Length: 169
Image (tube, rainbow, N blue to C red; front, side):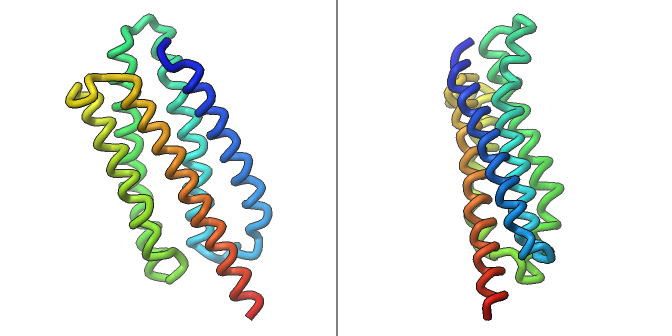
């Protein structure tokens, strides 16, 4: 299957992010009451695991003897559906955390373009517009998942540093 080694590498990177998240979670006890830190922690875990799952979905489909273009169509659709559902369910929590000043107003400005780009690329790939149902477009979606996990890692560290600074003052 095209890109098999790359997808396995991406899955390993996702697992590494999940491990880092667990370590940061142990350190994060100081921000326990901070909804923003909890949200960044959740988002990093979610997208670390999502990276693993979505990097492995094409292998599952491939094992049923499905043609490559259909593998990338189904895989791209799965990413797009996941992200739309994610936005629907997480939006309320982000809005509440921002209203409580526990989540940076800038956070959505960082991750929203990544979400939008990923959804658009995956839908276009699934429809065969511009990308023509290719591995490359699907891989770009998985790569953007890693960027989302990384962005939430950085935002989580920022939340922890802010909490530590407030505790010191």
